[in-house]
Amino acid sequence: MKLGWSDVTPESLWLNRRSFMAGAAALAATPAFALSGKPSALSTDQKPNSFEEITNYNNFYEFGFGKEDPARYAGALTTDPWSVEIGGLVERPGSYGVEDLAPESALEERIYRLRCVEAWSMVIPWLGVPLASVLNKAGVQPGAKFVAFETVLRPDEMVGQRSRGIDWPYREGLRIDEAMHPLTILATGLYDKPMPNQNGAPIRLVVPWKYGFKSIKSVVKITLTDRPPQTSWEMLQPNEYGFYANVNPEVDHPRWSQATERRIGAGLLAGRQETLMFNGYGDQVADLYSGMDLAKNY
Ligand code: MTE
Image (cartoon, rainbow, N blue to C red; front, side, top):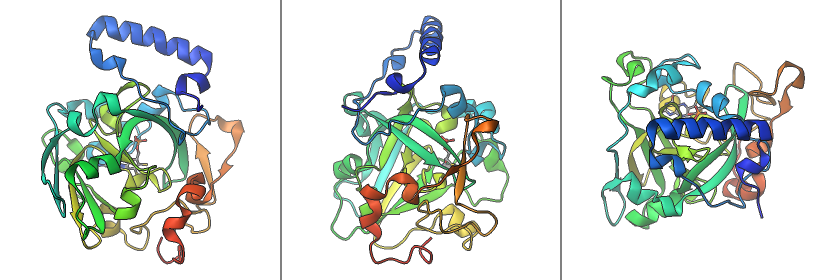
């Protein structure tokens, strides 16, 4: 059996978390704090980053470009009620509630490595459901070849959306076989708690073998299409960010090497660690790209 996050977190942290949770529960008395997910064989047994690290070092440009901006400003986002519009090449298009897409009883714990294109990494104990289970609820039509995702557009609540630079809303996309892969999830929580706003509440994509920018946050729209969708980073800098964005230590970013990464929280003396092809998920996903030139399809 695979370890749950509490087995691989140092005991001190676990105890801290318990007293934190007791305090928080006393304050808020919300049943949402009791989330739990079934352990998964797809989890890594690497040590997860702390809750504090995961929620205070973020990229969520809708709230600014600084790593601490999301923690500071994302509280302004209203995440309840929330629904996801699923459309395009599906049998049952419509507006789906988060509770219907990711019911508590279906949640799994997926402890995944996250490798940002900026060459830092973390390990995060997500709670979520396979994206495939969500797409199957809507019924994938045979002609669907790609899946497009959009983040909510709400400049009144998202300070970063009031300035340009990115053509909002943030957009991402996957090929249908990538979307249906068992590693690909829609996450609604982490560390047994509902998703913190700065991490993409209430529902965000997680694709662990791709650079973090593919894992789009606060999703409101999923569209199945027969052609590659436009993605925000490709639209902005096509020579730097491709559609695939698979983690690949051999294909450098034009402005920096992708051969190594800095694990957040590892400390100054720990040094950098080697980046693994497909972020270490090659056994599961390399087949998806057989015969493709991954230097061209970066
Ligand atoms: N999704 C949206 N909507 N906006 C963003 O700016 N940043 C991406 C991705 N998803 C981003 C986003 C990047 S660059 C990374 S590395 C991850 O979110 C970071 O996820 P985390 O903050 O939960 O670790």
